[in-house]
Length: 156
Image (cartoon, rainbow, N blue to C red; front, side, top):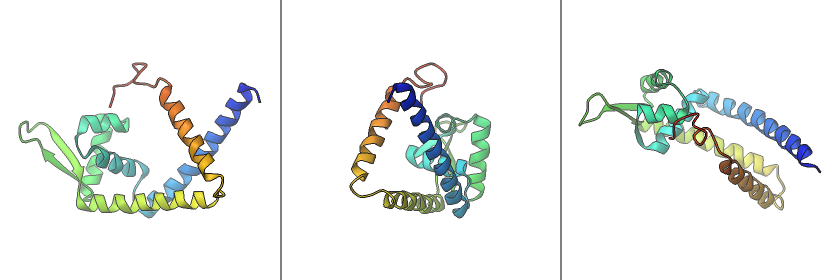
């Protein structure tokens, strides 16, 4: 198969996977009473542990205003806590509350159950090949210069 055909197949497969994953993530978020941006914000705040708003906005790919609105909603639902920096009251840190950790853990368990269900539809002898291919794809994507490398956006 020529490279052009392989690229076309890659694009078609990636599109199918993105559409299928998005639909299942939307259902998972709805079951957890979260929007997808709220899920990703909670996950990102967890990954960053305790963070300022600017790095959070950058990591989420949002403007400061959009990130603040998103965090406001999460604070009002009791999922996120804000705290002023002790050395500079203008600086605000955000972190997950206990309730936010609980909700995120439940949503992540649902996401893990989805992955287990997907793998149940792949024969056991093919699973190592699928994982090897996914790892190779992840490495290849990471090797391609991205927006930060090209000066399009700031590093995280």
